[in-house]
Image 1 (cartoon, rainbow, N blue to C red):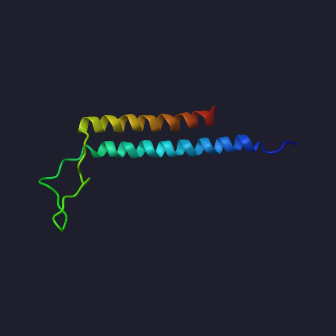
Image 2: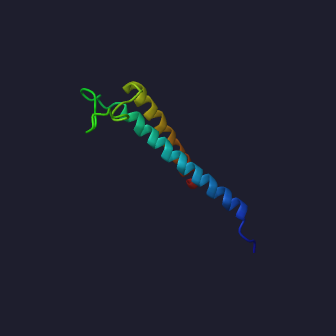
Image 3: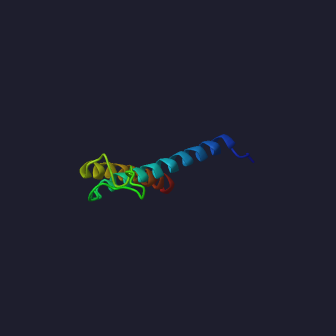
Length: 90
């Protein structure tokens, strides 16, 4: 009877953690890309004390670039997930 191969188990745990983080980051970047499609607000946004709001519905990306970034990120995340399922199934 052989014991548990702790080195291999540790590698599997680290790779699983890394891939999980990568998938979450890719999906969040896709959401940032899709937020570029939101229409710009009318007029300048200010807070209650008349200071301008920074980062509220302002995007440096055009809607086309944002959509492209979102599509690439979502396709990459889907490819990672599907490859993991392929490894498990076959």
